[in-house]
Image 1 (tube, helix red, strand yellow):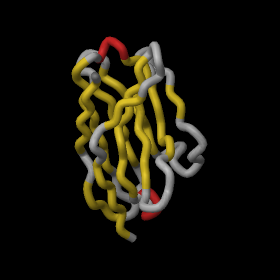
Image 2: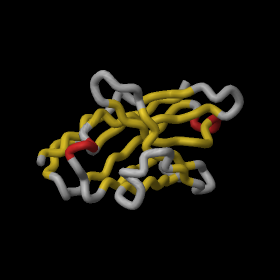
Image 3: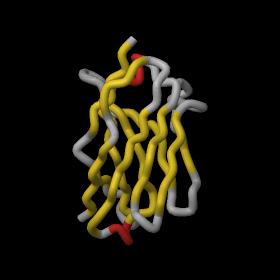
Image 4: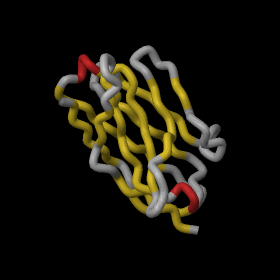
Length: 119
């Protein structure tokens, strides 16, 4: 089992920045890829960005976040971060930390952190 705890969400004005953090614990050795997803009411959870232990990143299909969001990772502390800059009201969502187990691709999720961007 892998446990994920997010922090750093909140309310920010458009154009502002937030940094989300996710701390992993448990069977961490089984994890290579970690990342962030987001979800708004009535919509499916969508990929924001992922990062492997070696630092390979994938920002998915969300063109709107490319160049504004930066994912990073601290392997020594088993943490992953999402730096969000130039935030827009459409970035408002619950952001979830994700970890994927290597041998069976099982996904583990944090409880989510609310990000609200006011116009």
